[in-house]
Length: 226
Image: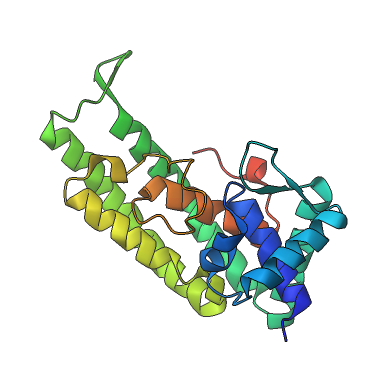
């Protein structure tokens, strides 16, 4: 028998993280719902009737949360932390993650643009291997700092278990010379795939950031500037 509250919590979170994904992909995205697709379709239909989700449009795939849906999702996530008595631990992980957000974003910017002379930014054509290697080395530092955070999160909540392997996979591709694996956004037409194995490090980072914000009820605007 499906736990309705847990299923609603997971569905609202999945739609928040991937509004362009179709219903078939939601269960795979979080890896902990284990809800048959027909039950999931029924569940999302009920969430729509309750005014918590809405279709993105006739031509746009996927769903999105309404303001009420966002609030209800955060309420359910907060209740889960209270039930498991892990709020303090998850919040600490969030703070450790946010501490690496600035270094990650700066690495992404420097991967895209170079400043060969002061005030003269140019597109990085990746012809300077030493420059690229220096950026990758900084990303490695970020990766080494955030990996234990991902491990702790996975121990606290199973729905975080997929992030460490995804980061590791992206890091291997970057080290292997795949230039797009650092910051290329995912293809918007791959809406039926919950886990695109060609996703970039930054795309995974952005999703985990939003996942943590939703879970602890944080305000992105109140975070330290990168």
